[in-house]
Amino acid sequence: MDVRLRPVTAGDLAMFERFAVEPGLVGLDWGGFRDAQEPARRFAKDGYLGPDGGRLIVEAEDAATGFVSWTAKQYGGVAGCWEIGIALLPEWRGQGIGWRAQDMLCEYLFTYTPVQRIEAGTHPENTAEQKSLEKAGFRLEGVLRSVEFRAGQWRDGRLYSRLRDD
Ligand SMILES: CC(C)(COP(=O)(O)OP(=O)(O)OC[C@H]1O[C@@H](n2cnc3c(N)ncnc32)[C@H](O)[C@@H]1OP(=O)(O)O)[C@@H](O)C(=O)NCCC(=O)NCCS
Image (cartoon, rainbow, N blue to C red):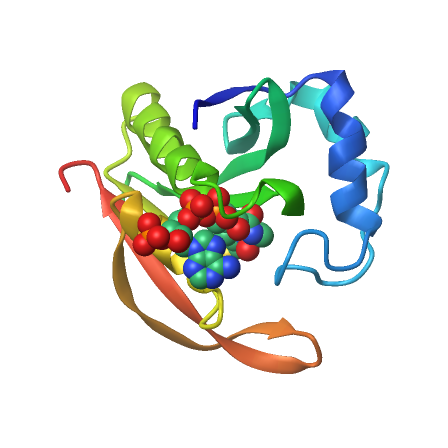
């Protein structure tokens, strides 16, 4: 599967609006309805390419299959790290796109930003994302207890990381 990452265009905003208001489309990260106007505002502000994070579209077979994202995180000291995320449209899942896109995003971030560490969290039942992260060079760091309120309950998470020299 030929996968590439490209900047968001105005034509992609309809997909982001769907993720905001279609229950469950985004997968386990669904947390209720979100403001469907927010993607247009963010796009107008910085094209989803800001200093503290952004999004790139995941393209395969000349189609926009979903997006990857990164957000700045700081544990102390002088240098932060990135937390990445991904959501593919259901019809594009399970075809080898997700692990490649996350691997490519890490290469991109390690090339154009000086971070030493990229992390990603996922759900204990999200086998597809756990396998994707491992194929993309991430290692499991541990369980985060009761870290997320989702679908009516506090739930554990799993934290993964990939270092510049892994
Ligand atoms: C999670 C997600 C990014 C994975 O990407 P993907 O393109 O579907 O996964 P890939 O095709 O790259 O598969 C990677 C590995 O996971 C396995 N896998 C894929 N879907 C699976 C599933 N539903 N159940 C179990 N394993 C699965 C693949 O077999 C492959 O492992 P293998 O090489 O050992 O066979 C994608 O499914 C998605 O966007 N899901 C909804 C949003 C989401 O959950 N995002 C992450 C939130 S933390």
